[in-house]
Amino acid sequence: MPKRLLPGRILFAAALVLLCAASCRVPPADPGPPSIRGLVKGLSESRSDLDITGFIQVESGPEEDTLYDRALVAVTRKTAFFRVEGGAKTRAAFADLGPGMLVEVWFTGPVAESYPVQATAKTVVILAR
Image (cartoon, rainbow, N blue to C red):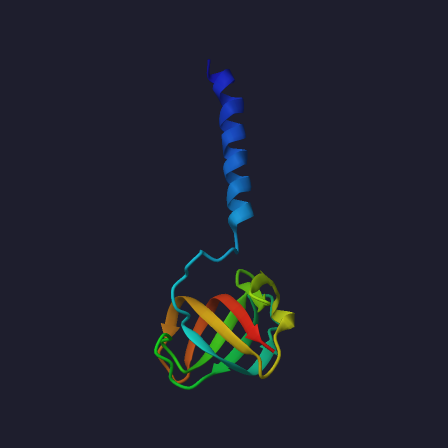
């Protein structure tokens, strides 16, 4: 009888992996307010072998629905990038960012409470060029 269960378990595990892979990097319907919304003031790519692909310096005036007005944000391979155009959200990439663009960033993990704060981006949404 265990031999019959094994293919079923393998199929279940494979379906679970495919479901998780299909949902990866898609932001939840309502992720809550962003950690910061502001203009990209600086960009740099990381040339190391680490998971960090680059850094974004984001600055804004105080806003009621965000936590920070300035941030140095690390971007990793796990960071999800999106662009809002014509009301539709589409996939984007770190390479699509440029100085002066309006972005929203949601942080993940610890935030270094320096000034500006230093954090890692979970999601970056490009709002305007």
